[in-house]
Image (cartoon, helix red, strand yellow):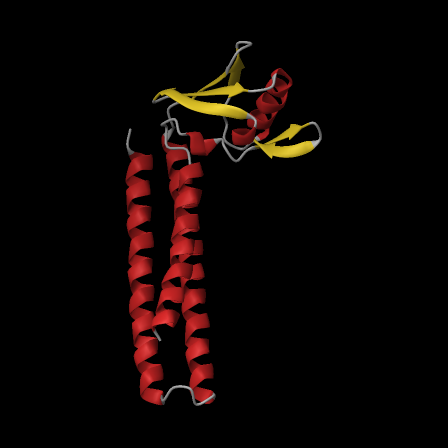
Length: 184
């Protein structure tokens, strides 16, 4: 039973980790390397993430600086950033590419909050799917006479408690991200 609970927690934690990654990509008016590091650049015909082609730094709270290691990578990085749906405009000075993060409009903030809520709901669904899988495993063990009915019900109660904890954590992450987005 303990290994079942640990597997349940591990899989639910992965859903929360994924939610955190998705939140990192949401623009909040502050510069963050996670905004752009997963953008794919066409580099010699191969889609490659920016963080594998260049060093990304944050010189101040509103600027992202990208320094491609290969001079031929400059135009590809610029094009990839322009094509991304982030609405950012890169400025190339020959040595580095700078991106100024503009302040968010009220409408854009509300859109970002909606996206954050969507990501949170996806995480909740993933957590509930793990719960369903674990409960199915318990029922299978009961049918195979590996555990009795009392153990199955105790296990289901524990899995529900774990599920509730992870959903509360996801909601807390959403509240934090929502405050961060709406902060001016």
